[in-house]
Length: 214
Image (tube, rainbow, N blue to C red; front, side, top):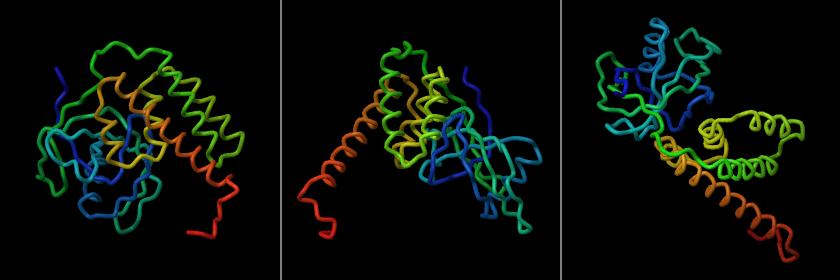
């Protein structure tokens, strides 16, 4: 049976994935009240995209990892950590800030993704990293971190949060509970990004390219 509970809800134009960090600046009165409520009770809250405060939407539990700064007017700078995913059953508003009845969810007990598929996705992501303007040591450190992660889900969520997808596509990936489907979607997106990069390189390296013509 799925775990059902009532939690505070925070609507954002961004998506938080499990085990990932996200900085937040809390400035709206209703959310300042929500954070005080959570801190008083030592609990977290749920993060959903702005358009997702309706039954059936998928979000992520967030725990307050660190209070970076508390302002005199009640604003907060926070660092939050993603926890388990949830499905919103029914939104409510009884305390002056959004809340909802939710059920915690996890991946369906499908067959495990083939190791070859995960490794292919990982190599594509390492190729993506190599194209970023990072120092060699930074790329090496990130590659080492990825090699130490054994969970397909963890690798997938790192990729989902760091390759620049818009919030809508991230939200769609967050809701995927079939690991095979998740890996296929991310592999396809990484291949698309590789093709875009190659087209751009070919364009800029062409003898006919004139950067003044735009």
